[in-house]
Image (cartoon, rainbow, N blue to C red; front, side, top):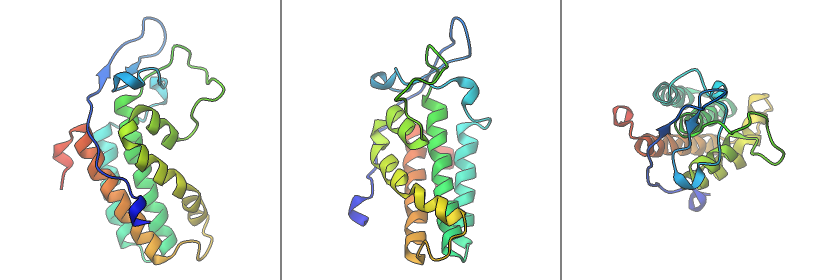
Length: 173
């Protein structure tokens, strides 16, 4: 599994815009992904910096959990917050706010669209999402202590990559 873990990526800066008619738009952060947009009213109520800070606290809490399933689920959810922070910075609104067939449906798919440099991370956490759901459901022995430790470490690295990517040096440890 160690060989399949993602590596550090380059950064890009966000660009904000306002739509002529309809909801406020936030332009995708990279030129090659400017077609992928999300309605602004579906973006999180917290700022990206708040999401990243919360994810860091969640990871610290996850590391303290004694039950592997809880540790795994909490760390994976922290990684999800990190991904949402990227979406909040980079995602915007489509010309139509209605969902079109074939559009991405998961946070990890959306992340691949707005931040291709994080594609390996998105794939990794998408692959592990089912196990998180099962761990959250309380299914015993679904996660080993080693898997829980690995996802905590992966989520910490993902957070560090995103902090650098988005330029939030105040959060760097």
